[in-house]
Amino acid sequence: MKKNEHYLFLGIYICYAALGLILLYYHEPWRDEAQAWLIARDLSLPQLFRQMAYEGTPALWHLMIMPFAKLGFPYKSMHLIHYLIALLIVYLWLYKSPFPLMIKILYGFSYLILFDYCVVARNYNISLLLLFMIAHIYPKREEYPFYFVFLVALLANTNVHSFGISVALTFLFYRDILKWDISSGRNRVLFFLPAIGILAAVCQLISPSDNIHSGLFQYHAFSAPFYALINGFTSTLMWPLVFKILVFVLLLSVVYYFLRLLRKDEDADIVFILSFSYAWLFYIFIFKHFGFFRHHVFLLNVFVFCLWIHINKKTTIHQRLLPVLIPLALCLLISVIHAGIIFKKEINLPFSGSLAVANYIKQNGLEKRTIVAYRAPHASSVLPYFKTLKFWYPDIRKFGTFVTWNSEYGRNQELKLEDILQRVKKAGLKDGIFLFNRKISISRCKQYNLTLLFKIENAFGYGDENFYLYKTPN
Image: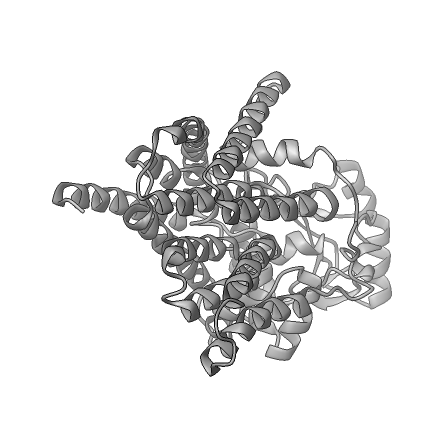
């Protein structure tokens, strides 16, 4: 690397790190972030693994944050861990990937890399870190096989979206290792390591019968590939339908062209990785969980991963890749613009109303009183700011912190106010403090003698973590 290039990358890296820190400072975590922290904090290790069957994800992220949650570290420590992972991702991307400078800058400052995979603390950026590490070592995987299979096994245990990519890489590794002398002790260990990783993930993902997400074909959304491809590559869907169709056709053409290029170069391994991974992701989006930006971007990340490996094999970027790189750059440019819009919102508006509610509860001594909270998933985002506070959830008719996605919860997702008050009365709860994520009309407040104590209505995150705190006469 030339000296001037090193200083340029260092400047880009420092800029990314500074922007990430600013976003981290202003970010108010939402319920999905709280769920992982509360599970890691409140459950024992055996209980945590049993809980994963309801979460629909392996426990790697929960295990990473569990020591900090158990030892009483502040909630923000989880986000610092997530931020450090993002810094490692961007370091590998800038210094180790073979892409042109413009692609490196656009991808590094895209919506997902700068916001969701930097600030919103989930398990998805671990997947990207592992993918980049695997891409970097891929040409030398026979020289460092233990390192390679260890990364692939970890990848299977990050989340269900990465599981399919890990299976594809494991299949190719087994094809290669069968050519080696399996009688040696070293190769026998290598033979079992990927299988152990896959098996560990499968054991955690097997759903109990009362899981509301159980079943191989939970629902169907056949339009999912259309939206997921646009969403994944551009991180936005705020366009007229005609423009969406044009972008979709462009992206399909790019993927098809890349696959044809791989076949011409007789690069069957990458064809298999890309095809298998996309089939797995489309299965999830169509039949299991439609998802959002952080899920759909796996389509982009797998594409970039395969492109990285292909370029490394060729040792240089050849002219035939321009029809891939130019549309990719245009999509990433759109994503960067989206990142700028979100940056402004994050600074000026709360992402979630959870922190504001927690501060009000603390300032007014309400943590010593029983708080009835509905709906449970949304209200749980408030609880990481307290060490011992639990809400009473009408959804499940008991005290709790995190949510278990079982049939009991599933039957009570649309409770009316009358149902909630009746359940509170039956449980013998007297304090009369209620936390809702939806506003109660003035007429209903008068009818049930509810007085509004506090409200926050400008949270921009996912539109459902504005909060309203009410009380009734004791």
